[in-house]
Length: 170
Image 1 (tube, rainbow, N blue to C red):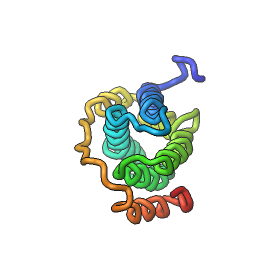
Image 2 (cartoon, rainbow, N blue to C red):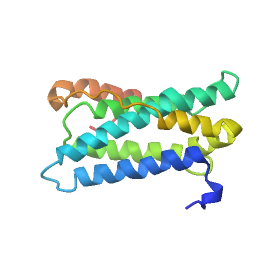
Image 3 (cartoon, one colour):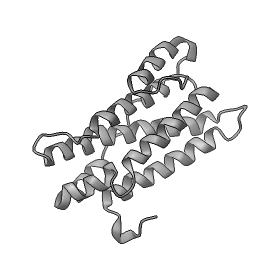
Image 4 (cartoon, rainbow, N blue to C red):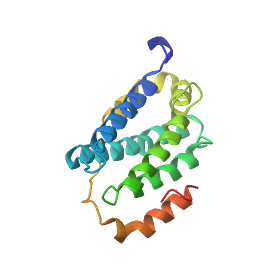
């Protein structure tokens, strides 16, 4: 664990949000026979907003700081985000939750840590970090549609996972 003085404000905000989202998912699916729909809806809204924070604020800010050049990891993160969003469309089943957990575990490792996205952005954005944190905090919630029948959307969900390189998760 990083000490307070070694963790920048972007890392602190977004890594803490990962912890909150992980807790919500664990709580929502704690009973293997019954998903807590209220908690899952909160997890879903929170995760979609978190992705929006990264896609609409953090990655563009980093790209601007690099003179228009995206971070090398940006394309990988965007593929993951597409796969995660696709998994949030159907009602959660055990395989969908397992796939979400697998992707989120790998994805969060790319973002966290001393060489992860967040620490990179803390270093790269320097004096602009606090303004970026303010913009991240101001990111509105994303409109969320009703959950779909898994069978109705599973083809599209599998294709999104395959595009991101997650071939046999579902």
